[in-house]
Image (cartoon, rainbow, N blue to C red; front, top):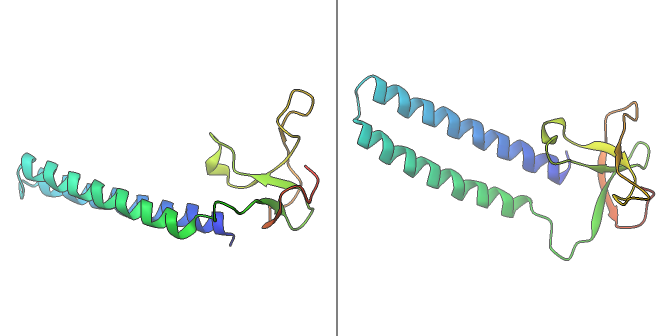
Amino acid sequence: MSQHDAWYTARRDEEDAASDALSHIRAREDAREITPAEAAAERIQLLQEHLDRLRQLRAEHQRPADDEDEPYCVTCGAALSIFQGQRDKGWQHYRGNGTAASPVEIYDAGHAPQTAWRPAGDGAS
Protein backbone atom coordinates (compact mmCIF):
# COMPACT_ATOMS: atom_id res chain seq x y z
CA MET A 1 0.00 0.00 0.00
CA SER A 2 1.42 3.37 -0.99
CA GLN A 3 1.83 6.22 1.47
CA HIS A 4 -1.11 8.09 -0.06
CA ASP A 5 -3.32 4.99 -0.07
CA ALA A 6 -2.45 4.51 3.60
CA TRP A 7 -3.44 8.14 4.29
CA TYR A 8 -6.83 7.78 2.62
CA THR A 9 -7.48 4.47 4.40
CA ALA A 10 -6.51 5.93 7.79
CA ARG A 11 -8.63 9.02 7.19
CA ARG A 12 -11.64 6.94 6.12
CA ASP A 13 -11.27 4.74 9.20
CA GLU A 14 -11.11 7.80 11.44
CA GLU A 15 -14.17 9.32 9.77
CA ASP A 16 -16.07 6.04 10.21
CA ALA A 17 -15.14 5.96 13.90
CA ALA A 18 -16.28 9.58 14.37
CA SER A 19 -19.56 8.83 12.59
CA ASP A 20 -20.16 5.84 14.86
CA ALA A 21 -19.41 7.95 17.94
CA LEU A 22 -21.81 10.68 16.76
CA SER A 23 -24.50 8.04 16.25
CA HIS A 24 -23.91 6.78 19.79
CA ILE A 25 -24.35 10.31 21.19
CA ARG A 26 -27.53 10.72 19.12
CA ALA A 27 -28.90 7.41 20.44
CA ARG A 28 -28.17 8.40 24.05
CA GLU A 29 -29.90 11.73 23.49
CA ASP A 30 -32.91 10.04 21.84
CA ALA A 31 -33.12 7.64 24.80
CA ARG A 32 -33.09 10.69 27.10
CA GLU A 33 -29.94 9.47 28.85
CA ILE A 34 -28.40 12.89 28.24
CA THR A 35 -29.90 16.32 27.66
CA PRO A 36 -29.66 18.14 24.33
CA ALA A 37 -27.11 20.51 25.90
CA GLU A 38 -25.00 17.57 27.11
CA ALA A 39 -25.26 15.96 23.69
CA ALA A 40 -24.12 19.19 22.03
CA ALA A 41 -21.15 19.45 24.40
CA GLU A 42 -20.20 15.83 23.67
CA ARG A 43 -20.47 16.42 19.92
CA ILE A 44 -18.22 19.48 20.14
CA GLN A 45 -15.64 17.53 22.17
CA LEU A 46 -15.82 14.60 19.76
CA LEU A 47 -15.38 16.81 16.70
CA GLN A 48 -12.43 18.64 18.28
CA GLU A 49 -10.78 15.28 19.01
CA HIS A 50 -11.61 14.11 15.48
CA LEU A 51 -9.93 17.18 13.94
CA ASP A 52 -6.88 16.67 16.16
CA ARG A 53 -6.69 13.03 15.07
CA LEU A 54 -6.97 14.01 11.38
CA ARG A 55 -4.13 16.51 11.83
CA GLN A 56 -2.04 13.79 13.49
CA LEU A 57 -2.78 11.34 10.67
CA ARG A 58 -1.90 13.92 8.05
CA ALA A 59 1.43 14.62 9.74
CA GLU A 60 2.16 10.89 9.90
CA HIS A 61 1.40 10.37 6.21
CA GLN A 62 2.62 13.63 4.70
CA ARG A 63 5.58 13.53 2.37
CA PRO A 64 8.43 15.94 3.14
CA ALA A 65 7.92 19.39 1.57
CA ASP A 66 11.22 19.21 -0.31
CA ASP A 67 10.33 15.84 -1.81
CA GLU A 68 9.67 16.29 -5.52
CA ASP A 69 8.62 12.73 -6.28
CA GLU A 70 5.53 12.02 -8.37
CA PRO A 71 3.27 8.97 -8.38
CA TYR A 72 3.36 6.53 -11.27
CA CYS A 73 2.08 3.07 -12.14
CA VAL A 74 4.68 0.33 -11.68
CA THR A 75 2.85 -1.89 -14.18
CA CYS A 76 2.89 0.47 -17.17
CA GLY A 77 4.91 3.53 -16.13
CA ALA A 78 1.99 5.95 -16.62
CA ALA A 79 1.44 9.00 -14.43
CA LEU A 80 -1.12 8.56 -11.64
CA SER A 81 -3.18 10.98 -9.62
CA ILE A 82 -6.14 11.14 -7.28
CA PHE A 83 -8.40 13.74 -8.86
CA GLN A 84 -10.45 16.26 -6.92
CA GLY A 85 -14.13 15.36 -7.13
CA GLN A 86 -13.20 11.75 -7.90
CA ARG A 87 -11.34 10.79 -4.73
CA ASP A 88 -13.65 7.83 -4.21
CA LYS A 89 -12.10 6.33 -7.36
CA GLY A 90 -8.60 6.43 -5.85
CA TRP A 91 -5.52 6.46 -8.08
CA GLN A 92 -6.23 6.86 -11.79
CA HIS A 93 -4.03 6.72 -14.88
CA TYR A 94 -3.82 9.94 -16.86
CA ARG A 95 -1.91 11.55 -19.66
CA GLY A 96 -1.31 15.18 -20.49
CA ASN A 97 0.20 18.13 -18.68
CA GLY A 98 -2.91 20.15 -17.86
CA THR A 99 -2.28 22.81 -20.49
CA ALA A 100 -4.35 23.87 -23.51
CA ALA A 101 -1.88 22.08 -25.78
CA SER A 102 -1.77 18.98 -23.56
CA PRO A 103 -4.98 18.67 -21.49
CA VAL A 104 -5.24 16.01 -18.78
CA GLU A 105 -7.06 12.89 -19.93
CA ILE A 106 -8.03 10.18 -17.43
CA TYR A 107 -8.07 6.76 -19.06
CA ASP A 108 -8.61 3.09 -18.29
CA ALA A 109 -5.27 1.31 -18.66
CA GLY A 110 -6.88 -2.11 -18.38
CA HIS A 111 -5.29 -2.85 -15.01
CA ALA A 112 -5.44 -1.53 -11.46
CA PRO A 113 -2.91 1.20 -10.70
CA GLN A 114 0.15 -0.05 -8.80
CA THR A 115 1.37 3.15 -7.16
CA ALA A 116 5.04 3.95 -6.58
CA TRP A 117 7.02 7.18 -6.54
CA ARG A 118 9.78 8.47 -8.79
CA PRO A 119 11.61 11.79 -9.10
CA ALA A 120 9.44 14.35 -10.91
CA GLY A 121 10.09 14.49 -14.62
CA ASP A 122 11.61 10.99 -14.84
CA GLY A 123 8.64 9.48 -16.64
CA ALA A 124 6.23 10.18 -19.43
CA SER A 125 2.94 11.88 -18.65
